[in-house]
Length: 185
Image (cartoon, rainbow, N blue to C red):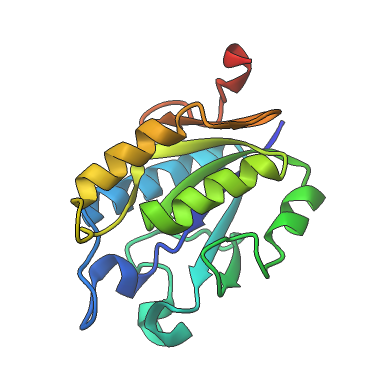
């Protein structure tokens, strides 16, 4: 089975914060876990795709780039997006289909926006998804803490399905590229 790691919006300014936003919850842990899973993806020969949001740092400069502490492999594919949905207006779906990808491992920022949307859109587009529970993050909202948002989405997206395809939530230390979806079908 062909697989891909999809790292969404793990960008310098979004993760660290800046003049107009706070940094994400448990940033160092999330960056560490992204690097751990990148190593697993490389070992399994999975495709590695980064998505960058053009709204971050006005789409330019070091703030727009993937966070400096994330070890981006030289053969990783990078797509830029304008919408919350990583599939909208990008070549992501076409790329994944061309590579015969069946399973996506998803990580990045921000939990309640781009991560949630990517997981749900991926299941609709024919992919099983593993969301890395300790590999995505966000900031506090006006009504919930970042930790509450993350816990809520981990619970909500575990077992989320669109008839044929669904998402599982697993930890970074698990064997993420040995999907467990079939044991639940």
